[in-house]
Amino acid sequence: MWRAIAALGVVALTGCSGAGQPASPSPAAIAGGPARCHTADLEVRIARSNGAAGHVGLDFEVRNRSGQGCQVSGYFGLALLNSEGDVAIAATRSTRVFSATTGPPRAVILPAGTGPFAPPLQDGGVAAVAGHAHFAGAYSDVCDNATNGTGNAWQLYPPGDTVPTSVLTTTGQNITVCGLQVTPVQATPPVP
Image (cartoon, rainbow, N blue to C red):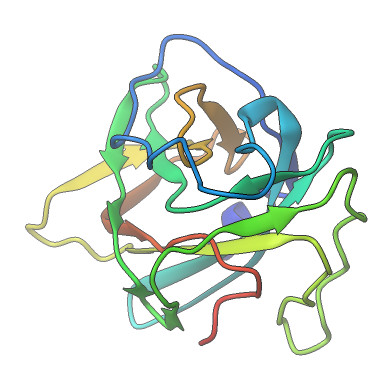
């Protein structure tokens, strides 16, 4: 299981077809500052995964790869897709998931063409890169009788956008997920 999650790597957000949307996007307008970031502007990676006692945490890192500054505010849509590309389970929104706690949603400015993703720290942590944003996802992989979904790809879309993307978790290996949650975007990595 851990190898499957670690294989996620980096993905550029680009549209895909045939998949449902997990939850309503966050409001599109943010007062003051640059325009809202769209799917085509962003690149996302899973910077770290960790787990214990049947729970798995995912720390996502976001950078602006476009030539224009933009901002994100709110929650990324996050869902697990099954092998047919349909949503198997969609995340609920929370300011606390697994070992990550965030504050309420607030705008994060992503300057034009921010730097590349930093390599993981030796302790498995995530280095904060200026101009990047972060959010966390978490789920249980011990579902018993809980509502769950089985799939092999993560679907993401930025706050306020309805153009989804998929991030493959493995080269075809399915995982079973229940209690999927996502935190709001923050300027720093989630705090365990």
